[in-house]
Image (tube, rainbow, N blue to C red):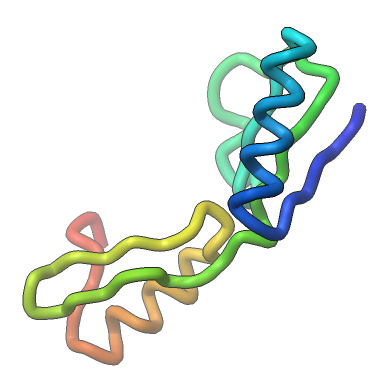
Length: 90
C-alpha cells in the first residue's frame, strides 16, 4: 500500500488530482482513530492527513471553530477548556 502524507493543502490537491486521473480510490484519514468502524476499505493508496494540524479559526463568543483534518482532538479540547468551553457531547 502506498501512503501519501501531504504537509500542505496544495499537496493534498495534487494527490487527489493524481488519484482521480488514475481512477484509483484513496483511503482518507486524519489519525485513523475510527478505522475499525464499518467495513474495511479496499484501496491500494492511503491519503494520511495527520501532518495537516492546527486550529485555523476560533471565535469563542460565536462558538465557531475550524481545524485542519489531522488536528488531534486533545489540542482542540485544550483550547476550548482555556475558554471555559467543551464539546456538546462531553
